[in-house]
Amino acid sequence: MIRYMLREDSYQYKPVKHDEAFWQLLRETFPNARCELNYRNIYELAISVILSAQSTDKAVNEVTPALFKKYPRIEALAEATEEKVIPYIKKLGLYKNKANHIIQFAKTVQADFDGVIPSTIEELILLPGVGRKTANVIVSEGFGLPGLAVDTHVERVSKRLGLVSPTDNSYQVELKLKRLLPPEKWHEVHHQLIFMGRYLCLARKPRCSLCPFREEYCQMIHHKK
Ligand code: SF4
Image (spheres, rainbow, N blue to C red):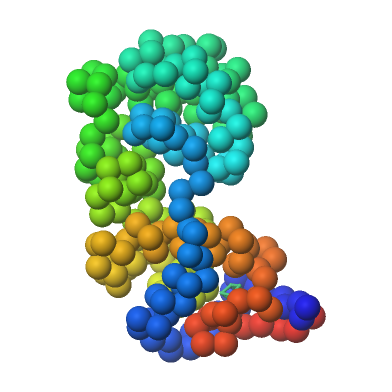
């Protein structure tokens, strides 16, 4: 296998047309792209997404069964203390902050939304621990409404494929991707870009020799090792 070396500043800014052929290739390359968090309802999805900040979905899936057995509903979590929750999520990074966030999230949903997790991005981002990424996941994955969450994979891959500018922040990436696509495509493309970031276009060692986007779409300069 040919090994390629690339640096994040190795953009070549080649003009690329992201027409239907591009989106078709993305679909065909990642036909099984989907949410890899395990959840049974919107409460479990929301808590899992908050816990997934800087942790893998696999790590989150390992801790949530016991957490949700102990706190099966949002009312129960709203009554919990950090000391009680921490042992369940201690394997995750930032577990102290996350314990605080999920409890405060539950308390705020109880107090301000009658215990019902809201379904709009504008309301969700008012909740503790919820940024635009988490809000978009809850809206699209949980409620089946248009949403396109930009995590580290979506941002990196979108830049490498020339979908957005290398200097865009995550909010600009979200807005640009949403402008490029009709709302009914946001959810599936979000998952396809995440799968590409997880399994092909890895941050440090992208598998460029296997990549069907390399010749026509990739913005990175490839140096053969
Ligand atoms: S898009 Fe493909 S060719 Fe470009 S860096 Fe990612 S894996 Fe490599």
